[in-house]
Length: 462
Image (cartoon, rainbow, N blue to C red; front, side):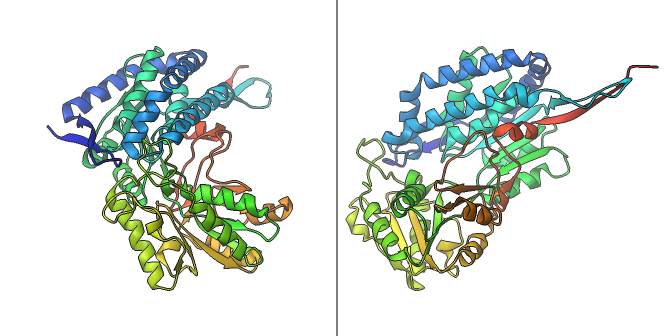
């Protein structure tokens, strides 16, 4: 029987081992889901919401345990790990708060002799495929609204974070969710692809890499099911001449280096107006030097290891290539004693003298590095921000709200921030353009992705 092993980036030990679901086990899970679907669909919305809220409480009650597991599975510093549990609670609670309004019938203007309205019907069985970098936050974006909308859910998590799927299902079971409504499966990539092709699957929500998203589209092709894809990012920030400099430095550096840079919506390139450039770089480098690279289970650590050694080596190669092409590296890795090639422990890096001929400014890094480029105008910054195959988020730093809004209208991204970055407001649609994906989670628009409209046109007077 095939096994899954979660190798902790902290020390290379096997932290979790699970068997991968066999084909008969997959078929059993599908049968349970199909059996549960009709009853769950008919369960009153208020009852579904009540179960969801109890699940949130059960999940939040395990914060310390979940945070420690997260730390060991994917390397989030323990001092920050509980923040993901709180973020889960915030997002899940918001989707519960807006469920009744978002799922209510859409009534048309009165027309004599007719009753007309649009009802939101659940899609059926949703397969949700979640990644390791924010394993709870990415999953809850789709899991909670899918369940509240009356769908049944199969959750497949990354092999790096298998406990996350188990803990989410446990919380809902504790809340009284009927059997079969929410299940998890540990699967290989090949088995996941085969599952997408199953006629039992009615919707796929995938968060992960661009190649992974392409696989989902290929597997779902010809099945006429809905597919939501939240893929990569190379998110930019632009610091205008009128920005609050210190705020811009602190915010963009945190956006670039939190979670060791392993965020699809993290800041990976910064464009700074020439009037602020030198001081911005000086302050940014000084701030990055304050990070403490260490084991994730050390409360003093502010920069943990990357998820795997090969991920760190990929980023190191990007940096080395950029330096060969003329970039200036401002951080000496020797300042971070745990840094060692061939390991997940990697010193942070700030690069200047960068341009879009360098991979580090165009290719997703997903690590603790950021390139900072000087610009002379809003137009130059806008052209560089949009010069990307990705379009997840973008950030503008400015005191001029009107000027920022004019720029934001022209930025090619799913979310544009002003004076902040790397944050999901659950009241807003989480979406991307270009290679960052398609579809949407969160907000009332997210409910539209997990339901289908059904029109009722009754002639009541004959």
